[in-house]
Length: 599
Figure 1 (spheres, rainbow, N blue to C red):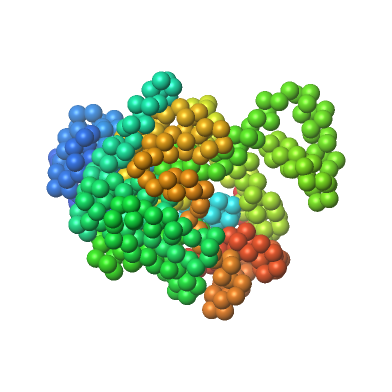
Figure 2 (tube, rainbow, N blue to C red; figure 1 turned 30 degrees about the vertical axis):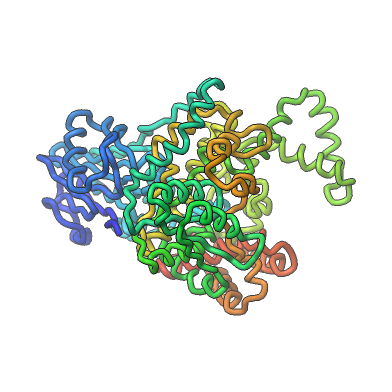
């Protein structure tokens, strides 16, 4: 596995404190630990990941020298030439300046902190936090945000004074100050409808080239869920290897969570060797502490468990590298909410008199529990449509529905700003370079669904299993092609991924193309109802969490009761998040939060 990046640099040239002695020392004011370190005069670059300069292939032996040559010629603009996944730091020991950057989509991560004149940075937020002279302090606001979003979104971290660099951004630090800016903005320049057919014909060859840029070898396999993206990546890889490939899937023994029949259809079509791991409740019990400890912050995506089980199986079968299909939904329009919110947005186009004088007064008077079904649906539609995006995305969210005072301990709540997460969501929404509704939803998901969530899930779990992972669907050429596809072609009416389905028709089995959208989840809520060891782990974790005075004990009790008597999966999400906070807290050996501190 590739080495983590960790570095410390004194912006004023003074010697670094002795506590920052672990990385390799380059003079008294710079210490680095990274997969690639290269020096050229007063410049030093440290790199994690697999970056390429333009169309050149990745070469660990030469990328450092080639990048520094480009940096001397173009300065920070040379980052725009980089492709692939990367986190990098460029240090100029003569001018006492540092530049940090990560890739366009955020496949890699990079955290940083300024502690006086010392800049510390690294791929682990925990390692960066431990470099601070004041020691590790937890960020109460980040824990609050985690319960709403199931993860801690960049630029925030769970550690006070430590930030994550946003995808597609560079940060420049000098004279004790740091500022960041976006170096890549997707153009969102849609091709005219007459060119859609030409774009469609380019899809499979473009993904095929992206797979080759991932540098697969005889020990490379694929994740295969049975969805469009993993099946396409598996099929193209298998065809390029005459079927001599290994595909890895998971099953759950719970019908509503299984896509194994579709994965098997892909295997039959492309002649792969298929390996299946059936996840059982015992795997969840064994994995929860390991998964929580693997992350440098609390992380609440429960599908990390089956991802880890699948990657571990691949490692046990001799694989060192897996190709993942993540990203296709977010670039080609495959998430069900894209269609749902198109329908809600139609409400704003209705005549004002119809909304103000008829629809809204009627919806306000209707009882959502007792009104006839058609009127009940009308009432629900009007209520949701009146909430603007992106806040409407959270309308299903239990924490959003309950409200902060019901969920959190009063002392903890006094230390946070409850409006902060929704405010940052709105800022992200408004920052999109396009005004097109679908473009905005995709842009929003590139950060919150991909960079902050799904990529963190897959990358960290593969790392835990000892596997390198690549994302051909997020290759720059594939993303660039997707941006040119008009929204009306990506999603025609209520059909998700219309354009992509037409591009793979004749290549993928028709049953995969026609299947309904299915999430990659974990039947945690269902298993928790009946599996005794899982109950012991979960309820024990929740009891410990009470003592930390973050979550309201009444809320914990009510969620447990609702889970036992009501919708197991829905309330299971909140239970999982609380368990992962407690388990992470234990394994990170983190200090308590400050209660009641002024906002």
